[in-house]
Length: 473
Image (tube, rainbow, N blue to C red):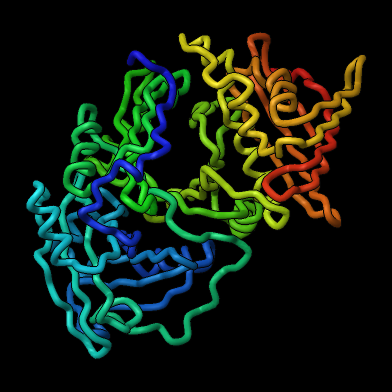
């Protein structure tokens, strides 16, 4: 690839042709081997509440389904009741996986006509499902692999989910302590050479626009690489990264997914949270196995993103990740979120030295770092460091960013090992420990900052730094 930077389109939603208004993701349906077990897992460990059920008791003879919700997230887990049929075949071939990423629309018939007239392959012609609570209208088209997109119109339906489902009146209590708000994005893994084909599909058939492009020099480790283009719809509420494998010393993680899933499919679903630290802590305390980038393996590479991620264990259907949104509004009432976002940005941003080693320039320089600090224009930054000249006094985002760049700018890998955020009267205390790899080895540094949030960001920061200490191999 000629370029090694992520190319972002900040005005992607301005470029969409919104002939297909999508209000958001209505639900995601997983086809699984055991729907009741999957529902229990997400209730007891992830805090989802079971709200509806379909099966033999409701007149459905070939499958059983549980509907679970948490804030704006709705998951459906469906399992076969017999060894024959499309659900059983799907589970036998792939294991648990995503079958349907459904969109909420005002007119399911119009959505089907618009997309099929532009080349989409129909999965379900416009259908009316009638029940005691009204009429639910649905249609569907195929996308990559065996995944479909349903169009769901609930304007004349007052039930919990759909006809054929009964409301669960007294569900077992769901776990608490996490903050999972909505689906942030759904990632599709496709074969080498298919990424641009499905980018064209989402642009031409669904009216999406490209939001950002990562090539294999951006998303890579020493052994594995991938390429990705992120598509978004007209209102920006739906985001679909499309990944394909890239050449590396070993097999790409995307190719591994394709080999084991035996087809193109949805690799993971990211869930948006405003409290990633608290949510991850609550999930881990309940026994959810969360995978982080390891200092040794670095299996997620040094991807430049504003999110920290946590992936649930293999025992759950497909994968679910917790993701911090890529941009957060900061005010005195949201200082904690802003600070956690700033730490996430610093911990995952590749350095100028790393970009130079990849053959590119330091695009944005100190200004790019300044934007990552979330400091107000007249913010004051003071630091005490374990050096011969211990005091640092900086004014404004660019001076402060230059200081952080001197600290972290020579690393080719920077990993956030741990962090904590706590309110101290009208200030916020945030501490974090970072491992980073430089040309002469691994180092660890711990910093603790006391911050005064302002109206639009950080107004004042006092920081104590341990100094960068070598880590024995």
